[in-house]
Structure formats: structure tokens, C-alpha cells
Image (tube, rainbow, N blue to C red):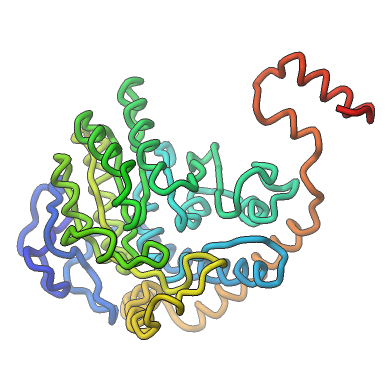
Length: 380
């Protein structure tokens, strides 16, 4: 990949083409500017990937809006959208292979769908009914999909990055080839878990890629009030880890940077830390009103950098997308979402028997007794 510019001016193309494993901590790596203009050469991409990125971002935004509507209607209890952050989420998530593992934070649900998590399971997890693979035992948006190597996020801030480091160490001990992705928000980098995760990953040269979605707000706390660091990416230096700052609303730049980091980790060269500079256009969650703590003119300015609009403009300029194609895609996506919601909402609550079947591989005698008594309708 092209080396980030030495100065933070986003429109300055990289001057050299270094070893693809070399990722520097300075500057802002960008391939496409907010207008959709290519400001640095875009490397060859897998066939169809660029179009698939736009389709996935459009789908996630439509899905997020429908899920938020369900919450407002009282049909689900909670939801957190990724509006404005779809480029950082999908661009980095696409860099991991099927055998790799992803440890997400709050707004990476689109990666689960990208990796093959069924839409019905995604929606059912927020309803917590019988179609939910976790049988209603997790908070909404805490998707978990073992077959596709997508681990449930942890509600405590930043704990998933220490889990990611531990999983990467396990890969080393078992002589595996998987790479681990650990996601975190800007606020999470001020937690002790962040220090522990990067410190041990650096010491072990573990095959893990840390990805920070710097959306400028740790709920209601702006990034400038929760860290004195000049950037988030520069924090990696203290742990002997390469860091890179990427335009998080440039889906192609996010993919190229993350792919180089994943390849580097798989080659045995250790971890990388990526800061994706982006913005949370909506609230922190359905329980939040951002107008109470931020100037919404700031959000309006970031809307001009919308990852969907930027990538669409880039594709249209190359004859790979059109308004007619988008209209047809959104109509199909809307029907798919509507049908999935209808199927999920018709499902019954989780079976009572799941009280006993989700903890032990082999039930201990006292739980077998309770299970049998419950089946007979006796007091447990």
C-alpha cells in the first residue's frame, strides 16, 4: 500500500511506495477525498469488492434505520446505529479472512453480516426470542456467531481488546495461521484494558490488528477531553507497535490499510494499531440524545464526508454505479429486511429448556433433577 503522507493534509498523495508491511504513525492515509476524487492511486482490488462495499454500506444504513424505528415503536428495547461509520466498519472488516476472528466493539455489527451471520439471527438477537442464537441472554446488539468467528462484544469498555490479544497469543501457542481483529472506540483507549492489550501484544508480537473507530465522542465526552494525546494512532508507539491514521470515511483506504496490517500479522511480524478517523452522525444509542452535549452543526459538517456518498461518487465516476441501480438495490434490501423482521417477530419466546442447556456440556446431576421436575410441572 502507499505510505501515508508525512503531513496531515488529506489531499497530498503519498510520495513513495514502500514495503507493503511498513505502516507509519504520521499523517492521514486517504485514497478518495469527500467529493469522490481519487487523491492517490487505488491498488487493484478483488473483483466486485468496490461495488459490494457500497451495497453493504447502503444495506447497513437501511437496516439501522429500521431497527431504530422498531425501538422507537417499543418492539425492541435498545439499538445502536453505525450511521456515518459504515466505511470504517466494513472497510477494515473486509480485510480479515474467514478463518480469522473478530472481537467487535459496539458498531461493528455490519461485519457479522459481511462474514455470513444470517440477517434473521441479527434481528432476532435484538428481540431476544427463540430465533436468537443466544436465547435472549445478551443485551441487544451483542451479536455472537461462532461459525463465522465473530465474538460477542463485551459491555465493559475496552475489554474486547485484551480478549483479542489473548486469542492472538493462543494462535501463536497452537501454531495457527489466524489473525485476530480487536475493535475499540476512542474513549476505550483511555482505559487500562487498552494498555494491557497493546503492551502484551507488542511483547509477544501477537498476530492481532487493533482498530480504533475514532468517532470523536466517548458517549458525551469529546476526544479532546479524554486524552491529551495528539492523535490516537500515536499511542501505539509506546508499545513498539506500528500505528497508522486512516480517513475512516474512505472505505477503500480503510480496506487497504487493514489488509496490509492483516498480511503483516499473518507473516509473523506482529500487531498493528489503526486509527480510523470518522464521526458518529447519530446518537451513541437509542437511549441517547446527542443534541444535549454537542453542536449539531458539527454533525452537519461531517455529513459532507459521508462514506456512502463519497464511495458512490467514486463508483459513478467509473461507470460502476447509477441512481437506477441504487433504487433497485434499496427496494430489494427493504423487502429483505421487512420479510426478516416479520419472520423474527412471529417467533415465540426462547424454550424454557434452554435454561439448562447453555452452560454445561454435560449437565450436573442437580440440574438434571431440576430439568426433569420442570418438565413434569413440579416446583423446581
